[in-house]
Length: 127
Image (cartoon, rainbow, N blue to C red; front, side):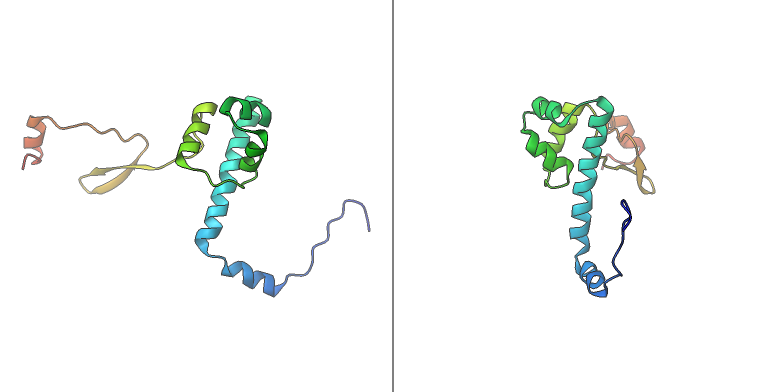
């Protein structure tokens, strides 16, 4: 066998069948955890921070940061917020929508403001 050569086994129908049995939400959950870890790692590399640097900044053990980057951590929104604050960048992106006359439309920055009494009357919202 040549060094560096990778050999793959023949496809196993049983393995493929078992993969198909995994619920879609379970697959998506794992995919999201892996993507979050990859995103954190991407930002750390760009900033030139090591896992140890980041662990110290965020007040965690380096072993926990390692689990985060490997996709082995179920993040809470509070943890994501703490990570984003420490990194100074978004880790997750949530689409924002606002309601217009024809229904909801996507917007990058949904700004909410209250209508004045005059505007409420003009748009029939004073009822």
